[in-house]
Every structure is written in C-alpha cells, then in structure tokens.
Length: 269
Picture 1: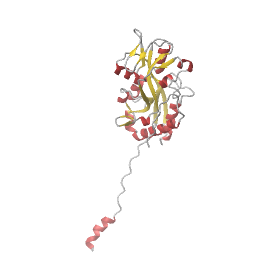
Picture 2: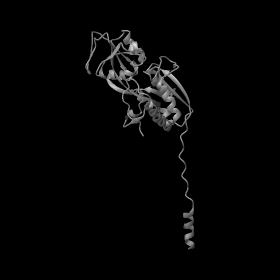
Picture 3: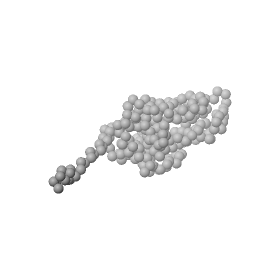
Picture 4: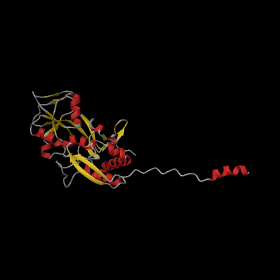
C-alpha cells in the first residue's frame, strides 16, 4: 500500500479555485450628446442649452444609466447633427442619444447590432421619413419614384441626416439645413418647396405651424432612433454599454405612447 500513498496524496489535495473573472470597471463619467433641435416630446427646445423640461429622451438616458449598476457623473450637451460624428470619433462625447444610423455615423459609433444591422429591438423611437410640403402650395407630386414640381423647385434636407443619404441614393438634389428645425423653417418660410424630414421632427413644431404642412405619400422610409456609443468608449466599457442599452429599451417601452410613434418591437430578454 505504501506505493499508493503519493498517488492518494495528490488526489486528496484541494482543487485549485479558478481565478475570478475580472469585473469590468464602471466609467467615472459619461458624456451624452443630443440634437440641438426639438424632436416631438422626446427632446424639447432648440439651441445649445436644455430647457427646464428637456423632454423624454434625456430623462430615459439618465434613468437607464442609473439602472445600469454604475453611478458615473453624467454630462449632457446639445450639438448640430453634422458635428455629432466628429465629436464621437474624437472621443469628446461617449454616447449619441436619439441618433439615426447613417452610413457615415456607423463608421465612427457603435450601435446595438444584430445580424450585421442596427437592432430595432433597442430603438428609442421609430418614425416615418418623407417629403413635406405646405398645404397651401400643392404644386409638388410624388409617386414613390419621381418627385415632380414647377420649374426650378427646391428641396431641403438636414445635413448629416438619414434623409440626406436617401436623397443622394435616389439622385435628388437638395439644399441642406443645419438642423431639423432649420430645414423645417426653410419650408415654412417658402425658401424651398419640399423638405425631406422625419415625422417626429415635424411633430415638434407648434400646432399652428405643424398644421401648415402635409406629408406626401408614400413615405420615403421608416427609420429608428438609437443611443450609439463611441467606438473607444464601447471597447473600454462593453458590459456597461450593453446594460445601458437594455435598460434604455425597458425605460422607453414603459413610457406613454408618443404621437405619431411607429410600433416598437419588444425588448430582448
């Protein structure tokens, strides 16, 4: 039996405990950028500052970060749509809230993805995007393929938007406004005869101005707004970002239904 003792001793040694998986640290601060123009009840007011009632989207973002299990300092800023790409690519902001996945933006920001495309289950909002005209100036025809109107009629679109990419793809020349609201007022003031805009942006107008506009059917497309992360921020805090996306989904689905909101899919389990 003595020859078995070394073998038994080895068997009786306590099993080594595997090292615990390293827990990802929480970010100390999160810098969040929003558009500098109103988007329905999601984002109130225009300009560089937030109003006393900033809207649903900032409230959702703050609540989702609070539920993420981390307690970073949250800094918010409002930016023109075109500047968002530069700010996130140069790591001056960490999250773009209520943003759309344009081809250019997807190169510099991380969206929640599924099968190689932005995952609509994580969308903060969905809306229709199409051509808008003034009700009292019905000289524009749109059949879903061709936009026709009087000689030298002018089209406006917001710089850096999904609508701008769609118009370029369709070969439709357009002037650009710096924000969704600027583009809308180019139409209201008669500087252009058509504007390509999301319905939720038009819905942010005062009722007396909104009633002056009409959406031409068929719409150009439905599209979604997301919260996107900077690539460097996502690489450093992937678990936090994914928890934030899930909580943002839950918070937004629990909110009252928005006017003109498209039906949102259920959050992932």
